[in-house]
Length: 121
Image 1 (tube, helix red, strand yellow):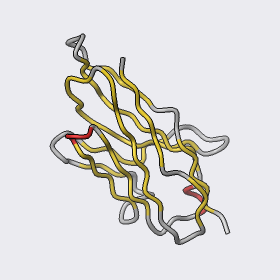
Image 2 (cartoon, rainbow, N blue to C red):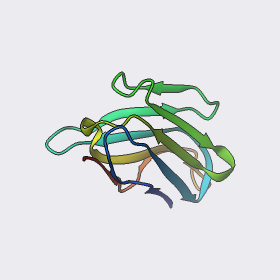
Image 3 (cartoon, rainbow, N blue to C red):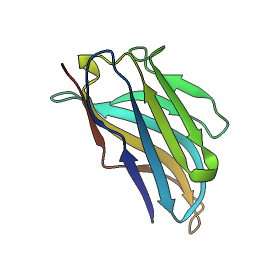
């Protein structure tokens, strides 16, 4: 079994910063892509950013220049540094990882339960 646990969400004022973390644990052999997604009230879940095991990153246009994704492969952890936050960034942020477990040759998608980010004055 593989578990993903996000942390770092909270309430922040517009223009502020937050850093999210997502740690993967369990029977992990390797992790390919790790990423962050978000879902605002009444909206569909959307991609925020992804990062490959080699460090190649991809960002949604709405967060380019404000958010930075990074990962620590030794810790199986992915981070999302968010700056210049806007009210429209308010959402539940979810972590996703493509994991090959020690008990299978298949690569499966795993999701965390999410952490709430609220940007409001």
